[in-house]
Length: 86
Image (cartoon, rainbow, N blue to C red):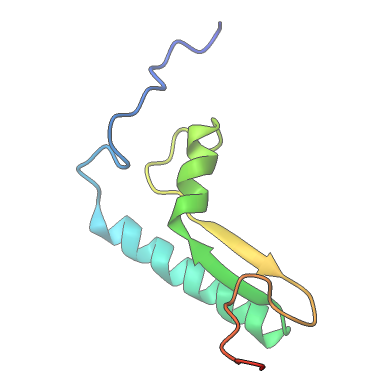
């Protein structure tokens, strides 16, 4: 093994975390989702997807990882149906 860093995590975020960087991440996510919505693409940010990706050794140098679910279909698979058809 070439990389000898400790990849075990006991908490979701190893703090302390600079809130300015987290705030910038929020603006970047909001902008990306807004651009997707202007192109009629359903997008939803999910922290749990980013956490799962980080646990699978993606973006190991980042403390906060957020995944964006993208749905390009006639019906959004990530949204709940609110219509009751009887």
